[in-house]
Length: 125
Length: 108
Image (cartoon, each protein chain N blue to C red):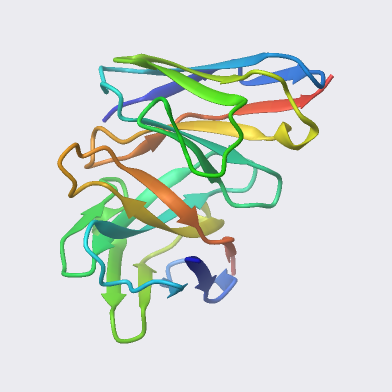
C-alpha cells in the first residue's frame, strides 16, 4: 500500500528557506504516469496547490510561487523534496505531499491520491 | 487561471439526510473535476474523480455529476462519518490546479 510521509523543520525564520522531504513507501517513485506533488493549507483556510515533478524531470509550478520554488526528486532514496526561499508569515501552513496521477494518460483526466498526513510549518522569528 | 466557487460554504444536516454541494468553475473544465473529503486534523481524501467516477473504497452513497462549469456532489444518506469539509478541484488547467473554498458539513 502506497504511503507518503512528510518530514522537515516545523519552524522557519522569515526570509529563510523552507525545506521539506516526502518519503514514498510501498511503490517506486520512478513509475510512469505519476507526478509527485506538494499542496499546502494555511491554518483554518483552504487548499493551495504548490507544484509537482515527474521522476524524469518535467515539472509544473504554481505561478504565484514559481520564483521561490524548487521541487526535486531523488529516485535513489524514493523521496521528493520542496524548497521554498524567502519565506514570510504567509507561508505558514500544513504542507502535504501527494501522488498525482493521469496527466500523461490519453484522456489527461488527473487527480491527487493518496496524500501524506501533512506537516505544519510555522514561519516566525 | 480558473476560479472555483462552492455553495453553500457550510450546512447543517442530520443523519440520513440527502446532502447536495455545488461547485462552479469560472470557465468550462469539461469533466476535469475532483472531489475531496477532509476531516479535522487529517489529510484530504479523494472521493470522486473525473466529475462522476467513484474512487475505489468510497461508499456508493457518494455521487458526483456535472460537466462544463457546474458540478454537484451528493451524499444520498448522511452518515456520522461524513461530517467533514468537502473540496472540489479543477484538473483541466494544469499550469495552476485550483481548489474550491470548501463546504463544511456539520451536525444539525
